[in-house]
Length: 159
Figure 1 (cartoon, helix red, strand yellow):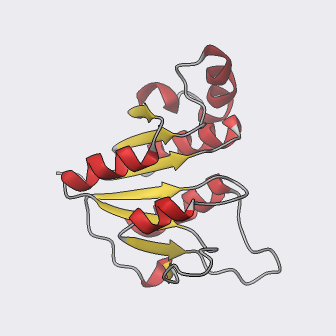
Figure 2 (tube, rainbow, N blue to C red):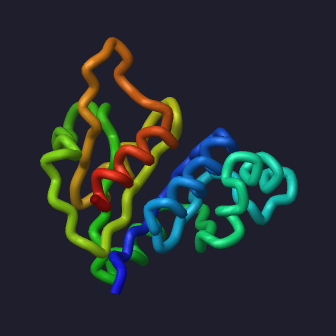
């Protein structure tokens, strides 16, 4: 049986980022994408055009579902014994420091949480994660585009 690998994309503002996440999810065999919060979906005809421009059809065959609440998805997946792993490098005070993704040994089933482009993963959602991972940064910028970060993380988790 293939690895069960889920993605929770919460509050992703850019429909082009959503499209890129779909396309990358297809490449790495993601089981299902959960679109949450204000993340656009392929069900909306206006969103579908922009998502499809980047996804190149992957939005048609990569399974997805929309939930308004990411916490509801987390509860649902945890009941199925899915590990919830957040991808975040700016957790702030009171939250455990993320582990470098290269040092993490994934166990499946696993759901990777992606947060909003500027603010990242909310504190509430960070606290719901079983583990937190980060992509170490060597340059002056402290973050990557969410879809680029997802591509790096998906590769690291599935290799």
